[in-house]
Amino acid sequence: MTQITVAALQLALPGPEAENIAHVSELVREAAAKGARVILPPELFEGPYFCRVEDEGLFSNARPTSEHPSVVAMQKLAAELNVYIPTSFFECDGPHHYNSLAMIDDKGAIMGLYRKSHIPDGPGYEEKFYFRPGNTGFKTWKTQDATLGVGVCWDQWYPETARAMMLMGAEILFYPTAIGSEPHDPDLDTSRLWRRAMIGHAVSNVVPVVAANRIGTEEGQRFYGHSFICDERGDMLAEFGATETGVLTATLDLDRVKRHRAAFGFFRDRRPELYGRLVEDR
Image (cartoon, rainbow, N blue to C red; front, top):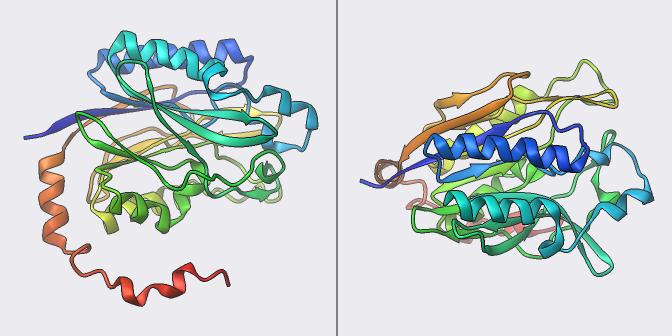
C-alpha cells in the first residue's frame, strides 16, 4: 500500500515580504510535524496580491529563481524538514516576467520550474500587465512518494490543464491560489464555483486535489480562503472556511486511487482522434 500525507496552508498575507515568508514557514513546520510530505502554500505568498492594479514600480519585486527570497527560504526548510514544497513566486528572467512555481524537493533542490500557463485579466486580477504566458508547458514531478502535478490559480479552472497533467503521470493535483472578491460585482462570490471546478477535475480524472488559498482583506479586496483537500471521488477530506488560518492535512492511499481510476475507465475510453477541435484557436 502506498500512502502519502499532503498539506495545504491557508493564511493572510498582507506583507511585508519577510513577515509573510516567516508566517508561511511557521505553517510549513506545523504541517511537517503532522507528517506531511508535500506542503502547498498559497500563490505568490511573498506579499500582498499586487495584481489588483497596474503599477510599473511593482516589477522591482520580481527576482530570478535562485535569488528569490521565497524560493531560498523554502529550499532551506525543505532540506531541514525532509519535505517537498511547491513554491509560487514572481519571477524575473532577463527582460521577461512570469508567475512561476519552483518545485523544491526534500533535499532542498529545485526539481524544476513551472510558469503559469493561463493568465487572467480583469478587475482586481490584472495579471497580464505583469506576467507573460508561461513557456514551460504543463509539468509533473516524479518523487519517491508520488508523481505530482501542479497548476497555478487560473490554471485550476481549465479541465485541459488537469487532464494534461494526468496524461503525464500525475497522481495528485495541487493548485496554489490567490482568489477572492470581484471588485466589479461585490455580490459575486465565486468560492463555490472555484471549488466545484476543481472537484470536477478530481472526479473526471479520478485523482485527489489539493488547493491552497489566502484569506484576509488587502486594499478592499477580500480573499475567501476555502482551501481544501478532496479525494479521487471529490469527497472532502479536509477543508477550511473563509477565515481560518492553519494547516489542512490528509493521508492518501494511492494504490486505492489507482484501482478506482482503472475501474472507472475514463482513460481507457478516451477518443483523442475526436478532440482536434480542442486545439483550434477559435
